[in-house]
Image (tube, rainbow, N blue to C red; front, side, top):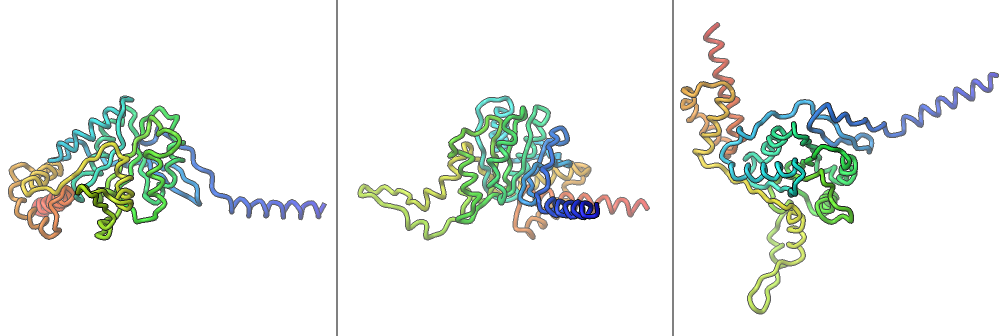
Length: 295
């Protein structure tokens, strides 16, 4: 009997060690908890993590990007209604509303079944698994890749290329990929790349293999939307919008103009992000000043 007990104890200890070595069970997705999710990895296993506090930015909060807003909103509108729509690449100046526009579209269409899954560049190799996980769902999913760029040879580059257009299986009907980048072709471009261009006898110029490879990924996005730096008046209009959002009176906004321009000059940018950051700072200081005077 003692031998049996010792055997069982050793067996329990061995099972405990084996269980500790095994990857944890993948948590089941509760689709009712959130409208946005992040793809996460734990001990090599991927799973969807609900995002409980989604940015509440609205389409009306995005100023001076009307054309870009119309293009993305129309494409998303088609997608949510089961009509043909394209994968989207948003490129251009930093802080001009690329990521915010995607979040605003989610907020506008979440009640119609739109969902968003944010995937880091390093996890793009799991795109096939993500698509398989959601392929049978009734919701419509945007796979969101923010601030995307690749160095040569990165594994995520080929995975994204295959997911967009290159796999033997067709892309799932309920999935689109929206990506933002400061690089139009998602890869670094060097002066030496120009050496690969070929000149024909009749004067035509044809890109070589290096250039063709760099263009091939961005070409797989059906819709390209470019964003540009804001002019001074556009920047100030965005500042005014956010100051009102943070509770400043319209009559007080002209007093912030000078400080807003200095704020942008110090940061070397008149972007929407800079305007929002200034408005938070200025509105906060005004509230603190009012509170101090009232005390």
